[in-house]
Image (tube, rainbow, N blue to C red):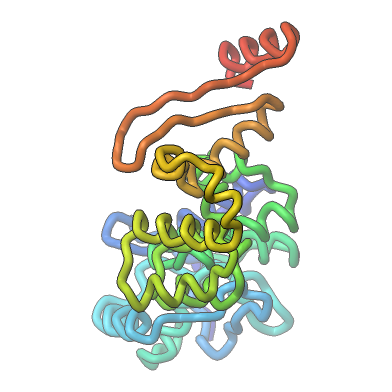
Length: 300
């Protein structure tokens, strides 16, 4: 028996609308309970086969199941109709935990999404999760940009993250799968991993970093030494002071990102551990200068 509740108006289209609905599905003490459209038998609900998230932490799932046993499902799942039942759009963790808790019915909010929107909102929900590892987060950004044409600026605005955070996180996808796995397993931090992107052998150096429990700064030194060993002539021609002040991988990535967007060369002078620095923008023509002034004055 399905218990019907008052239906709410469906969403409009677009990333902002999808973001609004995913936000309403968030769980946590700060999230106000939402009225479900209906209660449905749990066996009528199935997972999305295209769900981009493949790994569900067993310990966190057990904790959620214990919470659901005590308090029930506070926030309903977002679903769409599929055949005689319903397919999950957002909330698969709650569905899995509810199964562990032996619930017979679960609260749902029904939305009319097509296949593309289902994938998009599933990616967005995953990105919003606090326990998402950096590689999963990076993969989500890449999917949103490649599949749906979202720009880094649009993602930054919609997700409440800085554009540089999105750009630097996406760079993790340049690493070999073995190094990405170390990040996923928590053996390497995102900072360590980004430092290894420019190294001649990221996998070998990653193993050294893990074995030696090296800091990010020590990892940067290790990468520089590996590069010098690979190109001794270049190392000899470099001044020691210059090597000592070499920019971090994140700073270089941000320079490239800004340069690509402005169409002008950008240089960032920032020392590790410092809060301040300087940015130099080089222009070739007065037209470039006019364009830069226009961007800085209008924000476009």
